[in-house]
Image (cartoon, rainbow, N blue to C red):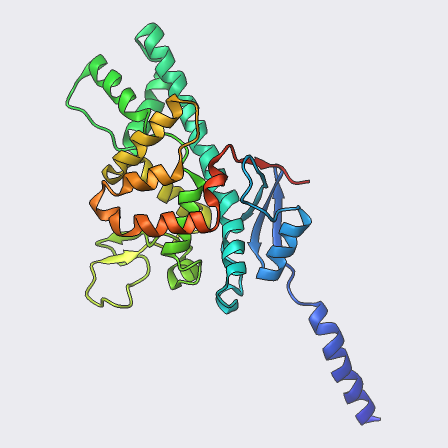
Amino acid sequence: MLKKILFFALLLNFIIIPSLQAAPVLLKKNGAIYVQNATTAEVEELFKQYDYDDFSKAKTKFPRIFLQKLPSDWAQIPDSHDKHRTFIRIMLPLVLKVNEDILAERAMLEKIYKHWQEEHKLTDQEKTQFEKFVQKYDVATPKKGDERIEHLLLLLLPKIDAVPPSIMVTTAGIYSDWGASRLALEGNNLYRTEVWYTDEGMKPLDDAKAQYRYRKFTTLEEAITERALKINSHINYDYVRITRMQARKLKSPPYSPQLVAQMLNDSNLRNIAGLIDYTFSYYKLSRTDFLPQLRNVE
């Protein structure tokens, strides 16, 4: 009798336990799915469910599926072309979401600028928002009063704009080794973002005396937002922003190979510019810059 009980206990262990494995943690909100925790297979199944496969077509609409972190088994998935494609599909909706937020800021800026041109004054609410933009996007001038406002508005217009998805996704893949790096897996740090003179963050493994740490982000979106802000504010990307502004005047999306060519004018970007160009050309990512949109999920 005891042997029969033990046999059925073992049988139940094989039948019940697998069915109790944790399901992916999903949060549906405002036409979007936020994936808190999932395996690679579960993420790929979710993409399949919402007909999200090919990202290389122009004017593609991507589902609002936002991973908060990389799949839980990402480190165990062998490096391959298919893994890179999954990484790209994870990144693109997040980049487009960040761009939506930036373009919302640009709409506010354009409204402020239009009012300034028409009335040569700003409301208190506009002044508050204007000063937030000045601080966030790091613009400055020695000019005072109305001349200051006029000059800073003109400096802000090239800075507050969407970043080309192809470049954001490609650089995330290059800097994070397609999500396999310790920084990406443990800190959602896709771009090797550093913080200086602090003990907070992840220590560099190859420099025990380093005065910097690698920043830990709460989500992948937070890391992408930080990178987009750097491209839109740091002096090293002046040439990229000028080219983007010229494209906007022509009512055309920025041409990614041209933007990468402009990186050659920035000394600290020369070594990586060629690799970026090769990577987004290989995966046909430049097509994602042509009017990509997000679509709600049911």
